[in-house]
Amino acid sequence: MSAERERRHADLERGLTYAIGGAIWLWLCFRWLNSWLGGVVVGPTEPLVPQSFATATESLGATLGAVGDGVPLVATGFDLVGWAVGMVGFASQYGPQLAVAAWLTVVLTVISTLVGLVVAVPLAAARVYGRVTKYVAFVYIELIRGTPLVAQLFLLYYGAPFLSKFIREVPGVGQGIVPAQAVWIAIIGFVINSSAYQAEYIRGSVESVDPGQLTAARAVGLDKLGGIRYVVLPQALRYAIPSWTNELVYLIKYSSLAMFITVPEIFTQADSIGSETFAYTNAYVLAAGFYLVLVVTASYGMSKVEAEVAIPGVGSSDAGR
Amino acid sequence: MSRNDHLLTVEDLQKSYGDELVLDGIDFTMDAQDVQVLIGPSGSGKSTLLRCVNRLTEFEGGTISLDGEDVMAMDVNELRRQVGMVFQDFNLFAHLSARENVALGPRRVLGKSKAEANDRALDELERVGLADQADSYPAELSGGQKQRVGIARALAMDPKLMLFDEPTSALDPELIGEVLGVMRELADEGMTMLCVTHEMGFARQVATDIMFLEDGRLVEHGDPERLFTDPRHERTEQFLRRLTELHGGGSES
Picture 1 (cartoon, rainbow over the protein chains, first blue to last red):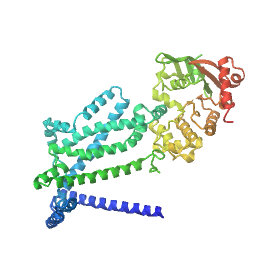
Picture 2 (spheres, chains in turn yellow, green):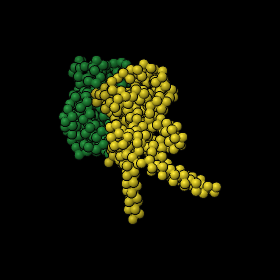
Picture 3 (cartoon, chains in turn orange, blue):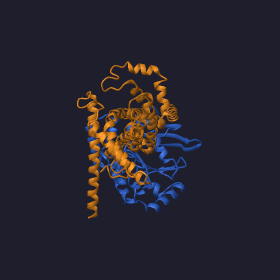
Picture 4 (spheres, rainbow over the protein chains, first blue to last red):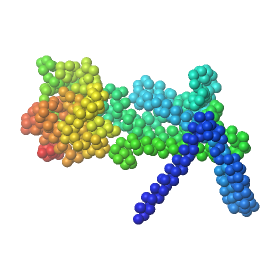
């Protein structure tokens, strides 16, 4: 009886999550498509709901906020309610701008973590199995992890003008949906930074694979590289997924540092909305909402991946079977 | 005597870890289809000796030849292709099914096609009685089944010689029999085997020769009946007596 109710409760919860998440992503995809096609439905950053809706909610919010003024606690309560109602109007008006900016955040993060992963795997392998390369990997990792990401971005953007010049001259950069050169420099910076962190995560998981398995691979006649490739890494990369997800989630938010090198991602856009409207709090809260959506989606997606590739019988979950 | 007469020749093998001499002048030969059992107290160098044969461990002195070829002169991966090894802790590849565990060598080392490697793997699993577990993963198998997969994995490479490094030591007593059964069948089929094991029942019935190793030296060797009934060295006698007391003269039978 109660188990049945619990199950229905879980179903309802899941349904709601999918409905809300689905609606948000549908809207995001619509905004992106609309923007890429040069605003075929509405202007690229123009809201779908009329300006009057925003004005109405904002004045409703102001009215609610004024209720109970002078009475302690009650006034604060209504201030909050009033702010929340006003926030809906604010979001309806400025959400589209942030949605367009969110695309850049997605691009920055996804490309950087994936390319970072490709760089991190050999780094981690070198760190564990290398003789000379071990030291090279060690120095790289410690140097990158030991210096601030902002400093790395500044160095790449302002300290290496030839890099900007080179990227700008690559055909297609900054045209259509291909981002401009500052974005590519941000991606280079994030790849360098993220690869160092990912290499350490992967090193940990490589070391957690029983070395006897590599011995067995060698005993069958595989060379060391083959053993690492076919036996150690397939397991290590699985074990690295939880911490790798952590890195992905970090990078979604750390990508806001690209603001310092003029990349118009979520945070940059929130900042400019703030300076335009002086509603900084609203702008930042709205930006935070966008980051939250991206982060929750990423961790949900990665938990699906983790379950999908789980080795039957291994680990605490029974997700594999 | 020429090395070419034997499948495996070990001459004056020396191996040390740092200052400690682990193997001190080991000499023996094995002919095709021989089953050589290696016994001795822990730390006597049995596993090290096995690992020198397929060069998982490098040795400093002496020579080992396989089929007349000096193993040090052979390509190490080629050597290992010809020598199968079964480990105490199974060392199965945890992310691969039983079939994939066995197929990995044929596929990635021998360069067979996926289908060929798969067929071969199924044949070998059939041979060790695990055809029905082909799609199970190591974590889903019992210890005895894991070890049989380990044997199938080594067999899939068509080895000239199989090395067994205490294949039943990590198993529950009731699972030992199934592994020894597979090993006995292999011996009957004419596989050349060098086994570190303390399963005296198996040794007595299957071994063509038993070697007693202590402190890196070959104390005594001979055919099982002679060694069991008339050991020449006191240490051999003591050790065998202790083993027999422990295992009742053959836990599998």
